[in-house]
Image (cartoon, rainbow, N blue to C red; front, side, top):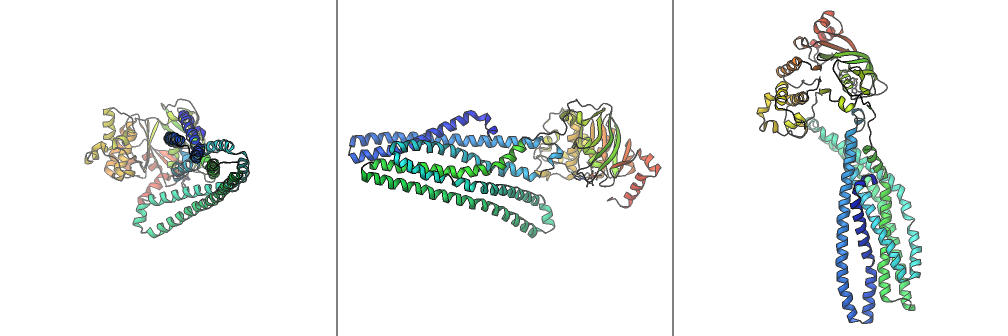
Length: 566
Ligand code: ADP
């Protein structure tokens, strides 16, 4: 946890300084009380006014110290929480695509919200409490000794018994807290899933099913929380009983010493006051120690997220794509059991246009993902100008290609920002991208043109408009390779045709289109049709060559005529 505090040494020093000052001035109230009572019992009126004046100033300073401590400690917590979120989110963003998909998004959301809140409540606040109460506890012993050594040792005995308590509850609490955190993460996942499917829920009338599913998940989370609260309650009440026990010892012992003439009434009041400072802080420490222990697994989880390093592509060679992209004997599987690509080889020449076709599940999208470096666990090689992706500087490598997927993600920003992605294109570059992508055809219908803000998930745009924005987004960066993974499927036929034609006309651009449209007019414009079957390339050639050959592609295109869903 200290790693998140390193940058805030000044704030930590100020917080601890005012923690010490406010705690000490709080403990010394006992001596003030003793003097007030001794002055009162001695009937000294001058002394009374002197101590009254001193007390007013004393309490004003005490108030100021308490305020400054509270202010600095709150600021410290805000800054630490901010740093934790920054580091964890930074770690998440550093993930490669393969590792990113291994963990549920809801788990990460839960870490950034629920877990961070747990760290605040069960680690940072208790830690500050322990520091403050520790100071109160130690200085109270000194004051206690000043009052009476015998009472001090009796109280010490009682306090030693109290020390056993946190050990009794610590590990049970840790287990329950971890279970609660896991349940919260499952709960967040379920809820996110249900809300994401809102339209399906409405249109299929499954509200009752969803409500009961939510109730179950909600109930399980509440029970996990209650199980933490039960053990907290036991811990708190046992500790409180022991604290009362300490106070009772002090009261009876000092009363006895007043009778024997060893002590004064002022000293008794002072001791009762200061003994509360022995048990209450100890109580707080007991209360806080298991909480801090219990949050350890959660801190470990956050640290793991923050420390993530991507070991997939570690090369450093500057990538180039001047001649060719060659795939040699490429095999890949998402999990070890089922091979998806099986020893596939393919040459993609610079500036040529390729249409990738084949049945659903034949591996087209997987091939695209591998070409663009989404997965590193392939066998064989993917060579850009004869250098395998694994040897390339990955950050620079991503500048070689842009992919337009069927599902386009839109940020909740303006259409302009969604296209430019915070780069600053030249005017003619922007106009060219708007024109070629077909964005210019609909943008005037939007009240604020390019400044129109895209609503969450792009609900104020049609599927076709989103895809056109995605095409513009890809074109504006002028990358040498453009991949359309069914990227124009939601656009009307005419517009899709126009966009495709323009992309096909772009000299120097290598275009790879995954398409289900086997229309001769469209496919004839491509230099090569790559027909995939069962994770391998079955045939490759121009449209005419493949049709004339009458092989797999021909049979597939005939079948598509009869059943377009294939
Ligand atoms: P296509 O694009 O030709 O429809 P894909 O490349 O999407 O085919 O899928 C090829 C095979 O890989 C399918 O059997 C599919 O179920 C499987 N697959 C695709 N993505 C994943 C994934 N993320 N995890 C596991 N299997 C996957």
